[in-house]
Amino acid sequence: MSGENRTPSDRAELEAQVAAHPFFIGMNAHFIGLLSDCAMTTRFAKDQVIFRAGETANRFYLIETGRVVLESGADAGGAAVIIDTIGAGDLLGWSWIFPPHTWHFTARAAEPTTAIFFYGTILREYCDKDPALGYELFKRMSEVMMRRLQRARDQMIAVMRKTAQGNNKPPRSSSH
Image (cartoon, rainbow, N blue to C red; front, side, top):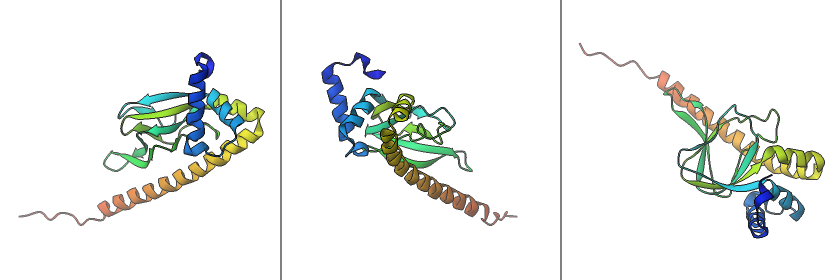
């Protein structure tokens, strides 16, 4: 576990960060302690890929500073479609809790970003042992999942409309 080499003051500081994050506001102290046992701080450089669609989802992040974009596939021009932009106060990564535990989107830091990293595989074990923790995380993750899926749907519809409009343009007239 990530907490094995921490000093008591490091642990207390991380636990305070976790408890203060908007995603975990109101969660009981016991659960915050368990979450903190599985956490560490991390940083991402601008344009660094955090995870890729299709890879194993075994972690999640609470964004502290910076911005991360979620990307899906490519549009007709070959550019990645940005599904959502996630910033300070947001959660990144819900796929670790839902089978088959694979990422649905690619996440990339849009600017230098700091986050709290959580080991999802360890948390799944904690959830199996303590269903109340699992239920609490499930409720919170489900809210994020529903918002993200709605945004993904909206973005995909916008891309399809743009593509359809591009295909309906009249042919260019040739000058003789």
